[in-house]
Length: 557
Image (cartoon, rainbow, N blue to C red; front, side, top):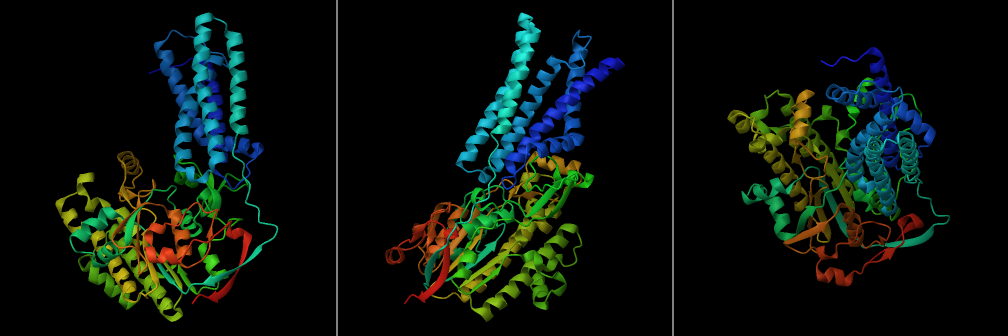
Protein backbone atom coordinates (compact mmCIF):
# COMPACT_ATOMS: atom_id res chain seq x y z
CA UNK A 1 0.00 0.00 0.00
CA UNK A 2 1.34 3.45 -0.97
CA UNK A 3 1.13 6.10 1.76
CA UNK A 4 1.90 9.75 0.91
CA UNK A 5 2.95 12.36 3.45
CA UNK A 6 -0.04 14.76 3.74
CA UNK A 7 1.72 17.71 2.10
CA UNK A 8 3.06 15.63 -0.77
CA UNK A 9 -0.42 14.19 -1.33
CA UNK A 10 -1.96 17.67 -1.46
CA UNK A 11 0.63 18.82 -3.98
CA UNK A 12 0.09 15.76 -6.17
CA UNK A 13 -3.69 16.17 -5.85
CA UNK A 14 -3.51 19.83 -6.91
CA UNK A 15 -1.46 19.01 -10.00
CA UNK A 16 -3.82 16.13 -10.83
CA UNK A 17 -6.86 18.41 -10.57
CA UNK A 18 -5.25 20.91 -12.95
CA UNK A 19 -4.71 18.04 -15.41
CA UNK A 20 -8.34 16.99 -14.98
CA UNK A 21 -9.54 20.52 -15.76
CA UNK A 22 -7.33 20.55 -18.86
CA UNK A 23 -8.93 17.27 -20.01
CA UNK A 24 -12.42 18.78 -19.61
CA UNK A 25 -11.40 21.74 -21.75
CA UNK A 26 -10.50 19.25 -24.47
CA UNK A 27 -13.89 17.56 -24.08
CA UNK A 28 -15.57 20.96 -24.45
CA UNK A 29 -13.75 21.35 -27.77
CA UNK A 30 -15.26 18.07 -28.95
CA UNK A 31 -18.74 19.27 -27.96
CA UNK A 32 -18.17 22.39 -30.05
CA UNK A 33 -17.08 20.39 -33.10
CA UNK A 34 -20.02 17.97 -33.08
CA UNK A 35 -22.83 20.46 -32.46
CA UNK A 36 -22.81 21.87 -35.97
CA UNK A 37 -26.08 23.77 -35.49
CA UNK A 38 -25.03 25.68 -32.37
CA UNK A 39 -22.75 28.63 -31.85
CA UNK A 40 -20.88 27.68 -28.69
CA UNK A 41 -18.78 30.67 -27.56
CA UNK A 42 -15.67 30.38 -25.41
CA UNK A 43 -17.53 31.58 -22.31
CA UNK A 44 -20.05 28.73 -22.59
CA UNK A 45 -17.32 26.20 -23.36
CA UNK A 46 -15.42 27.31 -20.26
CA UNK A 47 -18.50 26.83 -18.07
CA UNK A 48 -19.15 23.50 -19.78
CA UNK A 49 -15.62 22.37 -18.91
CA UNK A 50 -16.23 23.25 -15.25
CA UNK A 51 -19.45 21.18 -15.17
CA UNK A 52 -17.75 18.24 -16.89
CA UNK A 53 -14.99 18.50 -14.30
CA UNK A 54 -17.43 17.17 -11.66
CA UNK A 55 -17.33 13.77 -13.37
CA UNK A 56 -14.74 13.38 -16.11
CA UNK A 57 -12.30 15.85 -14.60
CA UNK A 58 -12.20 13.97 -11.32
CA UNK A 59 -11.79 10.66 -13.15
CA UNK A 60 -8.89 12.09 -15.18
CA UNK A 61 -7.36 13.55 -12.00
CA UNK A 62 -7.67 10.16 -10.30
CA UNK A 63 -5.87 8.53 -13.22
CA UNK A 64 -3.00 11.03 -13.01
CA UNK A 65 -2.77 10.62 -9.24
CA UNK A 66 -2.67 6.84 -9.55
CA UNK A 67 0.12 6.94 -12.14
CA UNK A 68 2.09 9.40 -10.00
CA UNK A 69 1.72 7.11 -6.97
CA UNK A 70 2.88 4.15 -9.03
CA UNK A 71 5.87 6.15 -10.30
CA UNK A 72 6.75 7.38 -6.80
CA UNK A 73 6.68 3.84 -5.42
CA UNK A 74 9.39 2.71 -7.88
CA UNK A 75 11.48 5.89 -7.94
CA UNK A 76 13.52 7.84 -5.44
CA UNK A 77 11.59 11.07 -5.96
CA UNK A 78 10.75 12.58 -2.60
CA UNK A 79 9.16 15.93 -3.32
CA UNK A 80 6.90 17.71 -5.76
CA UNK A 81 6.06 21.38 -6.25
CA UNK A 82 2.57 22.79 -5.78
CA UNK A 83 2.62 23.53 -9.51
CA UNK A 84 5.04 21.01 -11.00
CA UNK A 85 6.01 21.68 -14.64
CA UNK A 86 7.15 18.06 -15.04
CA UNK A 87 3.93 16.63 -13.60
CA UNK A 88 1.74 18.96 -15.67
CA UNK A 89 3.58 18.49 -18.95
CA UNK A 90 3.48 14.70 -18.68
CA UNK A 91 -0.10 14.75 -17.37
CA UNK A 92 -1.24 16.99 -20.22
CA UNK A 93 0.44 14.69 -22.74
CA UNK A 94 -1.13 11.58 -21.24
CA UNK A 95 -4.63 13.06 -21.19
CA UNK A 96 -4.24 14.59 -24.66
CA UNK A 97 -3.30 11.16 -25.98
CA UNK A 98 -6.38 9.67 -24.31
CA UNK A 99 -8.53 12.48 -25.70
CA UNK A 100 -7.17 11.93 -29.21
CA UNK A 101 -8.54 8.37 -29.13
CA UNK A 102 -11.96 9.70 -28.12
CA UNK A 103 -11.70 12.57 -30.62
CA UNK A 104 -10.77 10.31 -33.53
CA UNK A 105 -13.55 7.81 -32.80
CA UNK A 106 -16.15 10.56 -32.54
CA UNK A 107 -15.09 12.46 -35.65
CA UNK A 108 -15.11 9.20 -37.62
CA UNK A 109 -18.52 8.18 -36.31
CA UNK A 110 -20.02 11.63 -36.93
CA UNK A 111 -18.08 12.27 -40.15
CA UNK A 112 -21.35 12.69 -42.09
CA UNK A 113 -21.87 15.93 -40.11
CA UNK A 114 -18.81 17.49 -41.73
CA UNK A 115 -18.42 18.97 -45.19
CA UNK A 116 -15.10 19.03 -47.03
CA UNK A 117 -13.93 22.29 -45.45
CA UNK A 118 -14.94 21.19 -41.95
CA UNK A 119 -13.07 17.89 -42.35
CA UNK A 120 -9.92 19.89 -43.09
CA UNK A 121 -10.42 21.99 -39.94
CA UNK A 122 -10.95 18.86 -37.82
CA UNK A 123 -7.83 17.29 -39.32
CA UNK A 124 -5.82 20.42 -38.42
CA UNK A 125 -7.17 20.23 -34.87
CA UNK A 126 -6.02 16.65 -34.59
CA UNK A 127 -2.53 17.53 -35.84
CA UNK A 128 -2.24 20.36 -33.30
CA UNK A 129 -3.38 18.09 -30.46
CA UNK A 130 -1.02 15.31 -31.56
CA UNK A 131 1.86 17.81 -31.42
CA UNK A 132 0.71 18.79 -27.92
CA UNK A 133 0.71 15.13 -26.84
CA UNK A 134 4.27 14.60 -28.10
CA UNK A 135 5.64 17.88 -26.77
CA UNK A 136 5.46 17.03 -23.04
CA UNK A 137 7.77 13.98 -23.06
CA UNK A 138 10.16 15.82 -25.40
CA UNK A 139 10.48 18.76 -23.02
CA UNK A 140 11.01 16.46 -20.03
CA UNK A 141 13.72 14.63 -21.96
CA UNK A 142 15.46 17.93 -22.76
CA UNK A 143 15.23 19.00 -19.13
CA UNK A 144 16.68 15.78 -17.71
CA UNK A 145 19.39 15.56 -20.36
CA UNK A 146 20.56 19.19 -20.36
CA UNK A 147 19.33 20.42 -16.98
CA UNK A 148 17.84 23.67 -18.32
CA UNK A 149 14.55 23.55 -16.49
CA UNK A 150 13.26 27.10 -16.75
CA UNK A 151 13.81 27.70 -20.51
CA UNK A 152 12.52 24.24 -21.41
CA UNK A 153 9.24 24.49 -19.50
CA UNK A 154 8.64 28.15 -20.35
CA UNK A 155 8.96 27.20 -24.02
CA UNK A 156 6.69 24.20 -23.43
CA UNK A 157 3.86 26.14 -21.86
CA UNK A 158 4.07 28.90 -24.47
CA UNK A 159 3.98 26.40 -27.34
CA UNK A 160 1.23 24.38 -25.60
CA UNK A 161 -0.90 27.48 -25.15
CA UNK A 162 -0.42 28.26 -28.84
CA UNK A 163 -1.37 24.75 -29.97
CA UNK A 164 -4.34 24.63 -27.59
CA UNK A 165 -5.52 28.04 -28.76
CA UNK A 166 -5.07 27.01 -32.40
CA UNK A 167 -7.23 23.92 -31.86
CA UNK A 168 -10.04 26.09 -30.48
CA UNK A 169 -9.53 28.72 -33.19
CA UNK A 170 -9.92 26.08 -35.90
CA UNK A 171 -13.38 25.07 -34.69
CA UNK A 172 -15.84 24.56 -37.57
CA UNK A 173 -18.15 27.48 -38.31
CA UNK A 174 -21.83 26.89 -37.48
CA UNK A 175 -24.00 28.95 -39.79
CA UNK A 176 -27.52 27.96 -40.82
CA UNK A 177 -28.17 27.85 -44.58
CA UNK A 178 -29.52 31.21 -45.69
CA UNK A 179 -32.82 31.23 -47.61
CA UNK A 180 -32.68 32.83 -51.07
CA UNK A 181 -33.76 36.47 -51.39
CA UNK A 182 -36.18 35.58 -54.15
CA UNK A 183 -37.76 32.27 -55.18
CA UNK A 184 -37.91 31.19 -58.82
CA UNK A 185 -41.27 29.93 -60.04
CA UNK A 186 -41.19 26.42 -61.51
CA UNK A 187 -44.08 24.49 -62.99
CA UNK A 188 -43.68 20.74 -62.42
CA UNK A 189 -45.65 18.49 -64.74
CA UNK A 190 -47.22 15.35 -63.32
CA UNK A 191 -46.09 12.13 -65.02
CA UNK A 192 -48.99 10.20 -63.49
CA UNK A 193 -46.66 7.44 -62.30
CA UNK A 194 -47.00 5.99 -58.80
CA UNK A 195 -44.50 5.04 -56.12
CA UNK A 196 -45.00 2.81 -53.07
CA UNK A 197 -42.22 2.84 -50.47
CA UNK A 198 -41.98 0.34 -47.60
CA UNK A 199 -39.25 1.03 -45.05
CA UNK A 200 -38.94 -2.15 -43.00
CA UNK A 201 -36.29 -1.17 -40.51
CA UNK A 202 -33.79 -3.87 -39.62
CA UNK A 203 -33.88 -5.94 -42.83
CA UNK A 204 -30.62 -7.74 -43.49
CA UNK A 205 -29.46 -9.92 -46.35
CA UNK A 206 -27.83 -12.14 -43.72
CA UNK A 207 -31.34 -13.37 -42.97
CA UNK A 208 -33.10 -12.77 -46.30
CA UNK A 209 -30.80 -14.77 -48.60
CA UNK A 210 -30.77 -17.98 -46.49
CA UNK A 211 -34.55 -17.81 -45.99
CA UNK A 212 -35.12 -17.31 -49.71
CA UNK A 213 -32.95 -20.35 -50.43
CA UNK A 214 -35.20 -22.34 -48.07
CA UNK A 215 -38.32 -21.09 -49.95
CA UNK A 216 -39.63 -19.35 -46.84
CA UNK A 217 -39.91 -15.83 -48.30
CA UNK A 218 -41.75 -16.09 -51.66
CA UNK A 219 -42.38 -12.35 -52.04
CA UNK A 220 -38.82 -11.34 -51.21
CA UNK A 221 -37.79 -13.99 -53.74
CA UNK A 222 -39.98 -12.32 -56.35
CA UNK A 223 -38.32 -8.96 -55.70
CA UNK A 224 -34.90 -10.54 -56.17
CA UNK A 225 -35.77 -12.47 -59.33
CA UNK A 226 -37.83 -9.81 -61.10
CA UNK A 227 -36.36 -6.58 -59.79
CA UNK A 228 -33.14 -4.81 -58.84
CA UNK A 229 -31.74 -5.20 -55.36
CA UNK A 230 -28.59 -4.83 -53.31
CA UNK A 231 -26.96 -3.63 -50.15
CA UNK A 232 -27.16 -0.06 -48.92
CA UNK A 233 -23.75 1.27 -47.98
CA UNK A 234 -23.12 1.83 -44.23
CA UNK A 235 -23.94 5.19 -42.72
CA UNK A 236 -23.42 6.67 -39.24
CA UNK A 237 -24.88 7.86 -37.03
CA UNK A 238 -27.58 5.28 -37.69
CA UNK A 239 -30.26 7.07 -35.69
CA UNK A 240 -33.72 6.80 -37.30
CA UNK A 241 -34.22 10.58 -37.19
CA UNK A 242 -30.99 11.25 -39.08
CA UNK A 243 -31.50 8.38 -41.53
CA UNK A 244 -35.05 9.45 -42.42
CA UNK A 245 -33.91 13.02 -43.09
CA UNK A 246 -31.08 11.70 -45.26
CA UNK A 247 -33.44 9.45 -47.22
CA UNK A 248 -36.05 12.14 -47.84
CA UNK A 249 -33.65 14.97 -48.75
CA UNK A 250 -30.96 13.08 -50.67
CA UNK A 251 -28.43 15.00 -48.58
CA UNK A 252 -25.96 14.07 -45.89
CA UNK A 253 -26.40 15.56 -42.40
CA UNK A 254 -23.75 18.18 -43.15
CA UNK A 255 -26.32 19.73 -45.52
CA UNK A 256 -29.74 18.82 -44.16
CA UNK A 257 -28.69 19.60 -40.53
CA UNK A 258 -31.31 17.33 -38.96
CA UNK A 259 -28.90 15.67 -36.57
CA UNK A 260 -30.89 14.74 -33.47
CA UNK A 261 -34.49 14.24 -32.31
CA UNK A 262 -33.42 15.40 -28.83
CA UNK A 263 -31.70 18.33 -27.20
CA UNK A 264 -29.58 18.24 -24.06
CA UNK A 265 -28.89 20.82 -21.42
CA UNK A 266 -25.81 20.51 -19.23
CA UNK A 267 -26.44 21.52 -15.63
CA UNK A 268 -28.57 24.68 -15.51
CA UNK A 269 -27.25 26.19 -18.75
CA UNK A 270 -29.84 27.56 -21.16
CA UNK A 271 -27.71 26.64 -24.17
CA UNK A 272 -29.08 23.51 -25.84
CA UNK A 273 -26.88 20.82 -27.36
CA UNK A 274 -28.03 18.34 -30.00
CA UNK A 275 -25.10 15.92 -29.83
CA UNK A 276 -23.29 14.38 -26.87
CA UNK A 277 -19.96 12.72 -27.80
CA UNK A 278 -19.75 8.96 -27.69
CA UNK A 279 -18.11 7.13 -24.75
CA UNK A 280 -19.38 9.70 -22.22
CA UNK A 281 -22.07 7.43 -20.71
CA UNK A 282 -25.09 9.62 -21.51
CA UNK A 283 -27.54 7.51 -19.50
CA UNK A 284 -25.45 7.85 -16.36
CA UNK A 285 -25.20 11.63 -16.84
CA UNK A 286 -28.99 11.84 -17.14
CA UNK A 287 -29.43 9.78 -13.97
CA UNK A 288 -27.08 12.06 -12.03
CA UNK A 289 -29.00 15.14 -13.21
CA UNK A 290 -26.06 16.67 -15.08
CA UNK A 291 -27.99 16.24 -18.34
CA UNK A 292 -31.64 17.05 -19.00
CA UNK A 293 -33.29 15.86 -22.20
CA UNK A 294 -36.13 17.35 -24.24
CA UNK A 295 -37.60 16.99 -27.72
CA UNK A 296 -35.78 18.88 -30.46
CA UNK A 297 -37.49 21.49 -32.63
CA UNK A 298 -34.96 22.25 -35.37
CA UNK A 299 -34.84 25.88 -36.43
CA UNK A 300 -34.19 24.85 -40.04
CA UNK A 301 -35.88 22.17 -42.10
CA UNK A 302 -34.73 21.57 -45.65
CA UNK A 303 -37.20 20.85 -48.40
CA UNK A 304 -37.60 17.08 -48.68
CA UNK A 305 -39.39 14.89 -51.22
CA UNK A 306 -42.62 14.96 -49.21
CA UNK A 307 -42.72 18.75 -49.32
CA UNK A 308 -41.89 18.65 -53.01
CA UNK A 309 -44.80 16.27 -53.63
CA UNK A 310 -47.09 18.53 -51.61
CA UNK A 311 -46.08 21.63 -53.61
CA UNK A 312 -46.67 19.71 -56.83
CA UNK A 313 -50.01 18.57 -55.38
CA UNK A 314 -49.26 14.90 -55.86
CA UNK A 315 -51.68 12.91 -53.67
CA UNK A 316 -49.61 11.26 -50.94
CA UNK A 317 -49.96 9.14 -47.82
CA UNK A 318 -46.98 9.17 -45.48
CA UNK A 319 -46.94 6.92 -42.44
CA UNK A 320 -43.51 6.94 -40.82
CA UNK A 321 -44.17 6.86 -37.07
CA UNK A 322 -45.20 3.33 -36.04
CA UNK A 323 -44.44 4.16 -32.40
CA UNK A 324 -47.55 6.35 -32.46
CA UNK A 325 -49.80 3.28 -32.92
CA UNK A 326 -52.21 2.99 -29.99
CA UNK A 327 -51.61 -0.55 -28.75
CA UNK A 328 -54.73 -0.36 -26.59
CA UNK A 329 -56.78 -0.41 -29.79
CA UNK A 330 -55.42 -3.69 -31.10
CA UNK A 331 -57.87 -5.27 -33.51
CA UNK A 332 -58.96 -8.90 -33.56
CA UNK A 333 -57.23 -9.19 -36.92
CA UNK A 334 -53.87 -8.16 -35.43
CA UNK A 335 -54.30 -10.54 -32.50
CA UNK A 336 -55.17 -13.41 -34.84
CA UNK A 337 -52.15 -12.60 -36.98
CA UNK A 338 -49.83 -12.82 -33.97
CA UNK A 339 -51.34 -16.18 -33.06
CA UNK A 340 -50.79 -17.37 -36.63
CA UNK A 341 -47.05 -16.62 -36.49
CA UNK A 342 -46.29 -17.14 -32.79
CA UNK A 343 -48.85 -19.58 -31.42
CA UNK A 344 -46.24 -21.37 -29.29
CA UNK A 345 -45.27 -18.10 -27.55
CA UNK A 346 -48.75 -16.87 -26.67
CA UNK A 347 -48.35 -17.79 -23.00
CA UNK A 348 -44.65 -16.96 -22.75
CA UNK A 349 -44.34 -14.05 -20.30
CA UNK A 350 -40.58 -13.45 -20.52
CA UNK A 351 -39.70 -9.74 -21.03
CA UNK A 352 -38.18 -10.34 -24.48
CA UNK A 353 -41.28 -12.16 -25.76
CA UNK A 354 -43.50 -9.42 -24.36
CA UNK A 355 -41.49 -6.86 -26.30
CA UNK A 356 -41.71 -8.98 -29.46
CA UNK A 357 -45.48 -9.26 -29.09
CA UNK A 358 -45.78 -5.51 -28.55
CA UNK A 359 -43.64 -4.82 -31.64
CA UNK A 360 -45.64 -7.24 -33.77
CA UNK A 361 -49.05 -5.87 -32.72
CA UNK A 362 -47.90 -2.29 -33.17
CA UNK A 363 -46.55 -3.01 -36.67
CA UNK A 364 -49.69 -4.95 -37.60
CA UNK A 365 -52.04 -2.26 -36.27
CA UNK A 366 -50.12 0.58 -37.92
CA UNK A 367 -49.85 -1.19 -41.27
CA UNK A 368 -53.55 -2.09 -41.24
CA UNK A 369 -54.59 1.54 -40.64
CA UNK A 370 -52.14 2.81 -43.28
CA UNK A 371 -53.35 0.31 -45.86
CA UNK A 372 -56.98 1.34 -45.27
CA UNK A 373 -56.04 4.98 -45.82
CA UNK A 374 -54.15 4.04 -48.97
CA UNK A 375 -57.21 2.21 -50.27
CA UNK A 376 -59.53 5.16 -49.63
CA UNK A 377 -57.20 7.94 -50.85
CA UNK A 378 -55.49 6.11 -53.75
CA UNK A 379 -52.33 8.24 -53.45
CA UNK A 380 -49.74 8.73 -56.14
CA UNK A 381 -46.98 8.39 -53.55
CA UNK A 382 -47.31 6.11 -50.52
CA UNK A 383 -44.73 5.72 -47.76
CA UNK A 384 -44.92 3.31 -44.83
CA UNK A 385 -42.30 2.69 -42.15
CA UNK A 386 -42.37 -0.28 -39.75
CA UNK A 387 -39.71 -0.86 -37.08
CA UNK A 388 -40.83 -3.94 -35.14
CA UNK A 389 -38.21 -6.22 -36.69
CA UNK A 390 -35.50 -3.86 -35.51
CA UNK A 391 -36.57 -4.34 -31.88
CA UNK A 392 -37.05 -8.10 -32.20
CA UNK A 393 -33.58 -8.58 -33.70
CA UNK A 394 -31.99 -6.71 -30.79
CA UNK A 395 -33.38 -9.21 -28.27
CA UNK A 396 -33.46 -12.47 -30.26
CA UNK A 397 -30.35 -12.23 -32.46
CA UNK A 398 -28.40 -14.54 -30.15
CA UNK A 399 -30.89 -17.36 -30.70
CA UNK A 400 -30.48 -17.18 -34.48
CA UNK A 401 -26.67 -17.29 -34.20
CA UNK A 402 -25.97 -19.23 -30.98
CA UNK A 403 -22.45 -20.07 -32.12
CA UNK A 404 -21.48 -16.39 -31.84
CA UNK A 405 -22.57 -16.15 -28.18
CA UNK A 406 -22.03 -19.67 -26.85
CA UNK A 407 -23.93 -19.27 -23.57
CA UNK A 408 -27.31 -20.67 -24.62
CA UNK A 409 -28.97 -23.95 -23.79
CA UNK A 410 -30.35 -26.20 -26.58
CA UNK A 411 -33.83 -25.63 -25.14
CA UNK A 412 -33.53 -21.83 -25.48
CA UNK A 413 -32.24 -22.10 -29.03
CA UNK A 414 -35.05 -24.48 -30.01
CA UNK A 415 -37.72 -22.27 -28.45
CA UNK A 416 -36.56 -18.85 -29.66
CA UNK A 417 -34.33 -19.65 -32.62
CA UNK A 418 -37.08 -18.99 -35.19
CA UNK A 419 -38.55 -15.78 -33.70
CA UNK A 420 -36.69 -13.49 -36.12
CA UNK A 421 -37.34 -15.85 -39.05
CA UNK A 422 -41.08 -15.70 -38.42
CA UNK A 423 -40.98 -11.90 -38.25
CA UNK A 424 -39.39 -11.89 -41.72
CA UNK A 425 -42.24 -14.12 -42.88
CA UNK A 426 -44.69 -11.59 -41.44
CA UNK A 427 -42.99 -8.81 -43.43
CA UNK A 428 -43.01 -11.07 -46.49
CA UNK A 429 -46.79 -11.31 -46.12
CA UNK A 430 -47.03 -7.51 -45.89
CA UNK A 431 -45.01 -7.18 -49.09
CA UNK A 432 -47.31 -9.67 -50.81
CA UNK A 433 -50.34 -7.55 -49.91
CA UNK A 434 -48.87 -4.54 -51.74
CA UNK A 435 -47.61 -6.54 -54.70
CA UNK A 436 -51.11 -7.85 -55.29
CA UNK A 437 -52.55 -4.40 -55.96
CA UNK A 438 -49.56 -2.94 -57.82
CA UNK A 439 -50.43 -0.77 -60.84
CA UNK A 440 -48.74 -1.06 -64.23
CA UNK A 441 -46.67 2.13 -63.93
CA UNK A 442 -46.08 1.83 -60.18
CA UNK A 443 -42.59 1.66 -58.71
CA UNK A 444 -42.41 -0.54 -55.60
CA UNK A 445 -39.51 0.01 -53.17
CA UNK A 446 -38.67 -2.01 -50.06
CA UNK A 447 -35.65 -0.96 -48.04
CA UNK A 448 -33.98 -0.70 -44.66
CA UNK A 449 -31.37 2.02 -44.05
CA UNK A 450 -29.36 -0.31 -41.83
CA UNK A 451 -28.98 -3.98 -40.97
CA UNK A 452 -28.14 -5.59 -37.65
CA UNK A 453 -24.97 -7.07 -36.19
CA UNK A 454 -24.04 -8.83 -32.93
CA UNK A 455 -22.85 -6.78 -29.99
CA UNK A 456 -19.04 -6.74 -29.79
CA UNK A 457 -17.51 -8.56 -26.86
CA UNK A 458 -16.51 -5.39 -24.99
CA UNK A 459 -20.05 -4.03 -25.20
CA UNK A 460 -21.45 -7.32 -23.90
CA UNK A 461 -19.08 -7.05 -20.92
CA UNK A 462 -20.23 -3.47 -20.22
CA UNK A 463 -23.89 -4.53 -20.45
CA UNK A 464 -23.21 -7.44 -18.11
CA UNK A 465 -21.59 -5.13 -15.58
CA UNK A 466 -24.54 -2.71 -15.77
CA UNK A 467 -27.13 -5.48 -15.60
CA UNK A 468 -28.42 -5.15 -19.19
CA UNK A 469 -27.86 -8.61 -20.60
CA UNK A 470 -30.99 -8.98 -22.75
CA UNK A 471 -29.79 -7.08 -25.84
CA UNK A 472 -27.60 -9.12 -28.18
CA UNK A 473 -27.48 -7.04 -31.38
CA UNK A 474 -27.29 -3.40 -32.42
CA UNK A 475 -26.93 -1.14 -35.44
CA UNK A 476 -24.97 1.72 -33.85
CA UNK A 477 -22.05 1.31 -36.26
CA UNK A 478 -24.27 1.35 -39.34
CA UNK A 479 -24.20 -2.21 -40.71
CA UNK A 480 -25.24 -2.48 -44.35
CA UNK A 481 -28.91 -2.05 -45.13
CA UNK A 482 -30.79 -3.50 -48.08
CA UNK A 483 -32.98 -2.17 -50.89
CA UNK A 484 -35.31 -3.72 -53.49
CA UNK A 485 -36.80 -2.01 -56.57
CA UNK A 486 -39.63 -3.63 -58.47
CA UNK A 487 -41.81 -2.52 -61.37
CA UNK A 488 -42.36 -2.59 -65.13
CA UNK A 489 -39.56 -0.07 -65.78
CA UNK A 490 -37.00 -1.71 -63.48
CA UNK A 491 -34.23 -4.00 -64.73
CA UNK A 492 -34.70 -7.62 -63.69
CA UNK A 493 -32.34 -9.78 -61.64
CA UNK A 494 -29.89 -6.91 -61.26
CA UNK A 495 -27.66 -6.70 -58.20
CA UNK A 496 -27.12 -3.01 -57.43
CA UNK A 497 -23.59 -2.13 -56.33
CA UNK A 498 -22.68 1.00 -54.41
CA UNK A 499 -26.25 2.10 -53.62
CA UNK A 500 -26.36 4.80 -50.95
CA UNK A 501 -29.24 6.12 -48.89
CA UNK A 502 -28.75 9.59 -50.43
CA UNK A 503 -29.35 8.09 -53.91
CA UNK A 504 -32.94 7.14 -53.07
CA UNK A 505 -34.54 10.62 -53.21
CA UNK A 506 -33.09 11.69 -56.58
CA UNK A 507 -33.96 8.29 -58.10
CA UNK A 508 -37.58 8.58 -56.88
CA UNK A 509 -37.87 12.16 -58.16
CA UNK A 510 -36.51 11.08 -61.53
CA UNK A 511 -39.00 8.23 -61.83
CA UNK A 512 -41.88 10.61 -61.14
CA UNK A 513 -40.63 13.00 -63.83
CA UNK A 514 -39.61 15.73 -61.37
CA UNK A 515 -36.35 17.70 -61.46
CA UNK A 516 -33.31 16.45 -59.58
CA UNK A 517 -31.54 18.97 -57.36
CA UNK A 518 -27.83 19.51 -57.95
CA UNK A 519 -27.22 20.27 -54.28
CA UNK A 520 -28.24 16.73 -53.33
CA UNK A 521 -25.37 14.46 -52.35
CA UNK A 522 -27.09 11.54 -54.06
CA UNK A 523 -27.38 10.78 -57.76
CA UNK A 524 -29.94 9.11 -59.99
CA UNK A 525 -29.06 5.44 -60.34
CA UNK A 526 -30.09 5.20 -63.99
CA UNK A 527 -28.83 1.60 -64.10
CA UNK A 528 -31.95 0.66 -62.11
CA UNK A 529 -34.23 1.48 -65.02
CA UNK A 530 -34.47 -0.29 -68.35
CA UNK A 531 -33.25 1.36 -71.55
CA UNK A 532 -36.70 2.15 -72.89
CA UNK A 533 -37.50 4.18 -69.77
CA UNK A 534 -34.20 6.09 -69.60
CA UNK A 535 -34.34 6.75 -73.35
CA UNK A 536 -37.76 8.38 -73.07
CA UNK A 537 -37.07 10.20 -69.79
CA UNK A 538 -33.93 12.37 -69.68
CA UNK A 539 -32.78 13.70 -66.31
CA UNK A 540 -33.83 17.31 -65.68
CA UNK A 541 -31.69 19.07 -63.06
CA UNK A 542 -32.11 22.32 -61.12
CA UNK A 543 -29.69 24.09 -58.76
CA UNK A 544 -31.65 23.52 -55.53
CA UNK A 545 -35.27 23.04 -54.54
CA UNK A 546 -34.65 25.68 -51.86
CA UNK A 547 -34.43 28.25 -54.70
CA UNK A 548 -37.73 27.33 -56.32
CA UNK A 549 -41.42 27.75 -55.62
CA UNK A 550 -43.16 24.80 -57.24
CA UNK A 551 -46.61 24.72 -58.74
CA UNK A 552 -48.42 21.80 -60.39
CA UNK A 553 -48.42 21.68 -64.16
CA UNK A 554 -50.66 19.70 -66.51
CA UNK A 555 -50.42 15.93 -66.34
CA UNK A 556 -48.23 14.43 -69.02
CA UNK A 557 -49.97 12.40 -71.68
